[in-house]
Length: 118
Image (cartoon, rainbow, N blue to C red):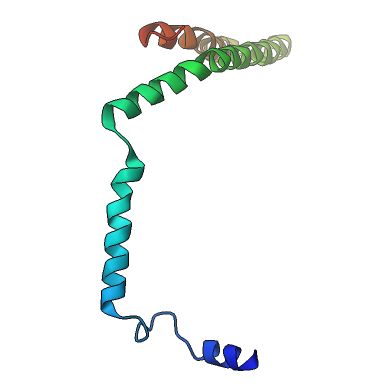
């Protein structure tokens, strides 16, 4: 066993003296020829991807609308706090948080109807 480690200790990874060029060439051709097989077909791949997106769209839409509701609640609390403290930037906060809340609640419905996802 110690003889094996002594042989490996002197081995350099960048040294290809032990490997013939033909073997490296054949291995690279083998790897390059199997890559298109793993890629799959063009139209079939798009159909499969579209079906996967349709399968996950309804839960994703619900989650995005849930996040929009949470953003609306947090924004409402921040606006209320600023209003009670007499801050002058309440209008900016209302537009910012209200816009974010509307965006997160309306956009999933718009995207779903635009791409034909229900």
